[in-house]
Length: 488
Length: 100
Image (cartoon, rainbow over all chains, first blue to last red; front, side):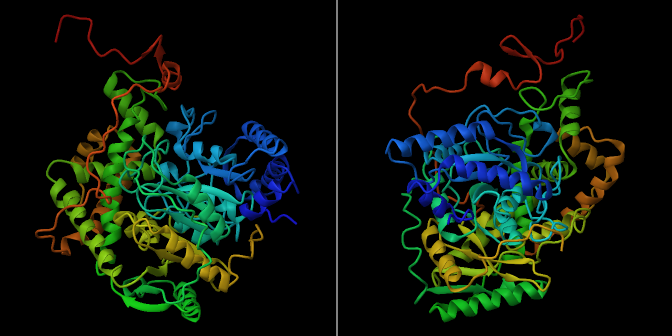
């Protein structure tokens, strides 16, 4: 029996010739055909190249050649990651017709590992948002209840794995865009240390914050995929020259004797009671597994989100200056001169949230405001980082909720930017400090929407995070139930 | 912090956005609210704190000065909304007349 939700199981079945890579690709597209009209996770599918890749993998196995660590495993990627032969739209009108000129580093790694890329998933436009409602094309639905948002910005990648259309996907996380939708969709989602995974071929949003990372239904698969995409890349000088261990090695080591820090600032009064309760129960489970639960303080937590929205938007306003209507992307048809061409092309091409962020970022970098906003935010960023440095002198990892609220219904927050930004208050600090973080399922709300437990670790200590995550997964069964993909 | 019309015009020009009239008021209001939200950072004492622009303690990273295969001309120009041979086509930027 092949468990399609498990990359490890699929790989084993293919390597032992219980099935072929072609069977698994066909199964992925069969599921997409059945489920995606309801979930709407995909912007585009890549049947042709997927079939070719599957045939290649099956050929290798038939000839007795060594196949890669993701042999024949169907994987989806977020549509802000370039893959030759596909459009990379960023769910934006401005890039609607943009052909990927090359393969992103992570795409090369996936293909070298013999993974089969199935398609490209929906997101908030340019990865700016927390609900996937900012996609210029359509809304993605939460497989646990189709009336709810899947989270964002990697909502398509999360919904795809949650509904078991593929066992794995890649997203990107600038302020929580992997961990938050993983929590909302009841799956595992991880962002490595800043510099762990190359950003080459990822459309830039906040360059000092962005990281690509895996979604999976279980911790072992997450470790497997992270190991495939991590590592030094000469094309991204911010990747770290730190050896990539086998992340699946040692994940069964348990938490006996480990110290898990619980920051009191992450349990403030306005955290949804259902979430606080599920996370408290998770901490009890860890204590039963032999971990020592240690109260810690991260005093600058409440400044993380304001700092993030200054830094990320400043970087975004600079990165998105490249959309000029000249080199690539949408061009306005009726421009009278060059300036008019820039201004019209950009205003027609960008959606409302992207404009808000570009304007805010431009403002905080502009003459007269730079010191008061941007420079001050960079200094607070130092303080946020120091809080973690202090905490990690006392504990091996930090455990806390991923989000202050569970998944919500369409339209509930989209008209009020600050209500939407509130969803990110517990995830942005890891990006500002460059730390690795993972969200794993740890329970359900009263109306059975998933709750995420967030674990944060020391720089380049992804191995410990995965081991801590696996210990909880092994002791509980919140990861085992798939959603029904319907309206409740 | 309240953004007024004049400031909105200034920042929209810097950002090269030709805002439609009906977009202006909602954006002005949202920006004012977001700026009020981030003002919270004024509470923090940042005296003698160094800024962090980057989480990794990396300095300059050098690569060898070697020619490598990069994108071909067509890979680049195929995405251009206006192309003339091997050039990007843009609206006229130099006036034909004698005035400067």
